[in-house]
Amino acid sequence: TAHFARKTLTTAITGASLAFLALNAQAAQTVNLGHTLSDSSHYSVGADAFKETLERLSDGEFEVVEHTAGALGGERAMIEGLQIGTVDVVITSTGPLGNFVPETYVLDLPFLFEDYDQARCVLDSEIGQELLDKMSDHDIVGLAWSENGFRHMTNSQRSVKTPADAEGLKVRTMENKVHMAAFEQMGVHPTPMAFPEVFTALQQGTVDGQENPITVIVATKFWEVQDHLSLTGHVYSPAAVLGSPILLDGLSDEERGWFVEAAQAAAEATREEVSRLEREGVALLRENGMTVETDIDKAPFQEAVQPAYEIYTEQYGSEMLDRIRASD
Ligand code: PAF
Image (tube, rainbow, N blue to C red):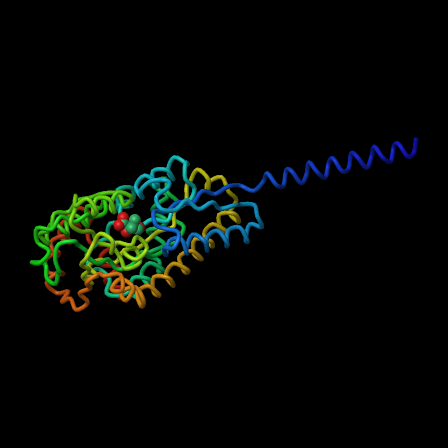
């Protein structure tokens, strides 16, 4: 009987441990992270850093699954997904973000930032934090500012050195009214479109050109459909790491802290990759047959897009703009 009792007890304990293990195994919560670029892109470098950091800090409580190359849709669709909880974390440019959080439009003004140092410094300051905090008024959790890069123009028609050269080109822009206003002023025909449709639109000649940072031109192999690149650097393109309130509002402060830390790690890794591609990307694009105009006089471009500032301030005032300028 003693032997039988011992055996029963052992069986019960083993059963309980197995149940405990199973419970623990089930506890890993999947975090679906989406972005629109390829697995070799600067966003993927950031997504990998996010995954590594969150899984390490949470000791396996969260498991991050990366959905790249627009598998979850374009950036606007993914931001909507955050609001309704079908996506947990998104790495996105500010392209469509102003449609949800108008306060971020200020960052989309052309020639606002002079260089990477200045842009990164403003986004890492209390101004950047304020903009991240504002997002919660619009059902989005702003986790960290990451980076896409300074945007440049590409097209299939001709070499562009001045705004006059660009006149009449049909150029795909992001779904962003500040960008569209600026391009209109420049005399090009802006055609807003979600990024997953852009390659085909360029291939089929629906549009002549597009504008994006070196990072994106490399990651998307735009040389296959675009011959000319002009380093206009007409606008700095921030990226943001955003979370869904449906997931994050239910977490403890400690767990939310892990998400913020993971997003900051993503931003840091992405910025390093942007800097590397700024050094090495142009040579790669030339090797792949693109003609690159590096010596662009930015003054006429800057002058051409100036009315976009008036259009912006008429609607949103100049307070944030003045603060950014004063932080130089
Ligand atoms: O052009 C865009 O829509 C964005 O720059 C991109 C490529 C999706 C990266 O955020």
